Length: 238
Image (cartoon, rainbow, N blue to C red):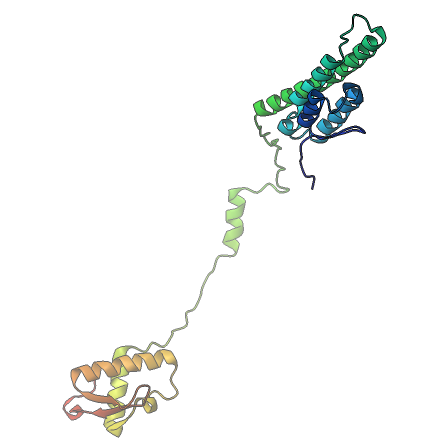
């Protein structure tokens, strides 16, 4: 991952930020002729291209760079009446720097235009093309389908009668069982029955206990339920 840092000047005579370079030029600790402006601008262009995806970081040092260029040119301007060779070298270097800066300005303007165009672009959704569905291989009509169905119409059927065991049946079975044994456990009565039938037998037992015709007791939780007859001799089984 690239760590984004600010632009640093790296030359033979100076290493540091552009602000520090400008201060050194004004203080006289470094001579203007010791600063390679062309190399400085080229290194900044390389920095700009590396961080072109972050326009604010890439152009952050641009004002300091322009200040350093202006400061060197101003310091190199000849104070004596005529130093033609120095003036020519300064003008050539200044012209080359200006050309490099124009290229940089064009790149910045291009990036700004690209960002503005991307901001104005609206997402669009293309409609799916509509294709004609292929017709079925056979020409089937409703009349043909009805005729085909009539061939397989059910002519006759049979039903299986399911044995039903109701609460009334459970009451009758309990009364018959108690008339024969007088007392016993509910487990003996329900022995061999499916759990659905056991539930109905228990419901019938509760009905008889509620009517007072049968007495039921349980000594402990989950223990056996003792069942005994109570005045059953006065009742007749239907």
